[in-house]
Length: 90
Image (cartoon, rainbow, N blue to C red; front, side):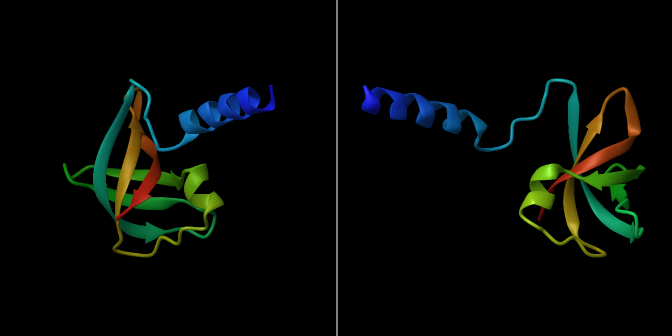
């Protein structure tokens, strides 16, 4: 009985690993141009658009440092593309 319970827990943990964006999310690459002290980043995307971004909780959890001129991957909402989240630092 204990073995079966452990297998179920491992399956649950396996679902949480990795990053899978939602259907309505757009992913772009960009360059960090400016950093404000309250946690916002000004990112210039590949298509030339400039957005204000926050850091996604997963990067905060692992204390990933983002500095000026870093190349990052940005997750934008298709309903409001002026704001987004930084989900990956390259």
